[in-house]
Amino acid sequence: MTTTPLPVPEADDESREFYDGARRHQLMLMRCRSCGAWRLPSRPRCPDCWSTETEWVRASGRGVLHSFGIMHQKLHPAFADRTPYQFAVVELAEGPRIVSQVVGVAEDELRLEMPLQAVFDDVSDDATVVRFGPRRS
Ligand SMILES: [Zn+2]
Image (cartoon, rainbow, N blue to C red; front, side, top):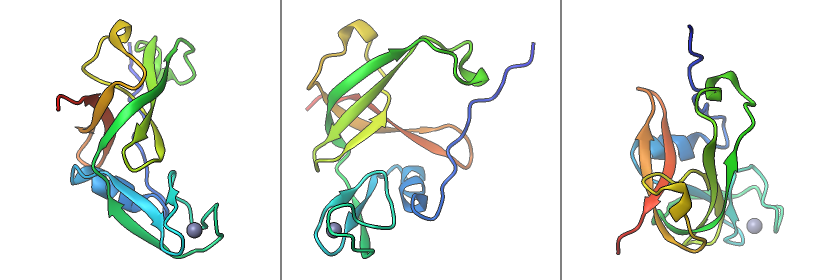
C-alpha cells in the first residue's frame, strides 16, 4: 500500500519570513509598521489601517489554548490513517490567534486557557511546522 506523504507548507511572499523563522525555531509575526496591529496570517495590507508598511517581530512563542477540535473527516488522503486528530487555536501572548496543533497532551487532558509554548517540528529538510506543547513555567 502506498502512503500519501503529508503536505508540507509552502511559503509565499507574505509568509516567507514566518516559515524561514520556523526553520530557525523562531516564531515570527508580521506587524503593521503604521499602527502596530498584528497580521496573522500575514498579508500585504493592514486590516485595521490599510497600510502596506510591515515589520517582522520575533514572538515569545507563549500562548494559551483558545479553542480546539477533533477532526474526523478525511479531507486529504495523507490524513486517511491519521484521523481522528486534534487541531487548536492558540491565543499568543502578543494577542493574535494562530491555528495549530497541541502536542504532548492527551486529547482528554486539553483544557481551554492552558498555558502553551511553541515547539518546532522539522518535518523535512526544507520545512518546519509550528505546533504547541505544554508550558511548564
Ligand atoms: Zn495598521
